[in-house]
Length: 234
Image (cartoon, rainbow, N blue to C red; front, side, top):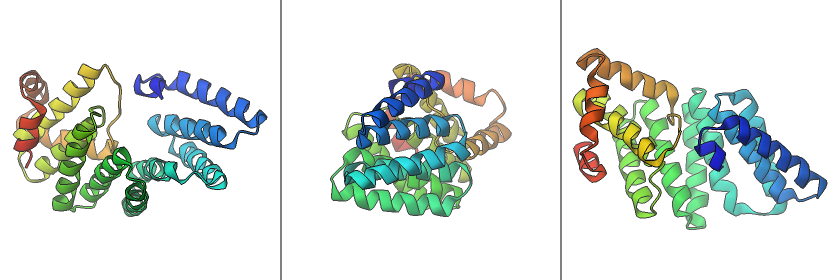
């Protein structure tokens, strides 16, 4: 997973494939499932969604056999991420709702934050802008509370999409810039939560403000706190 967040997906897949081979030989179902989950995550990040889904579903099936339900929310969210990026927004939302219910049962704060935020992206893609904003704001607050800034980038790009939909392109540009600043500060590589949706957001901003607007906003974002940006996005 460290290799995933460093953007080294080739190394991720090599390590995960080796782990799966070792743990299958040891008949260690749980860690085999974890290796399959890492393989599926890497495939999803590479946009190889046709490979990602069966890997994640195999992982989910093995976890069910072990009776370890605590990982269900994260796996459902991963499968929902794939559905979101293949345009099956309704299924993505349904998977996030299932994940959220499971995460609440185990008081898994990280999974609650992640599934809430991913549900926001599904809502935004379906035109449910008010619901989307509520999900992104809640997700951002939860991620800040648990000290996990990495996935704040997905909340910020979602809030940028909401702002762009409302014609608030200057604020949308600031939020896109803040997304990049967060990742730069963490030296992390993370693709957009919904690639097509984020691309549309950038196109709307550039169409309204010009091609250089995001670069200018990025320079300004260096001096704006996340709290202030989240207030602007309301």
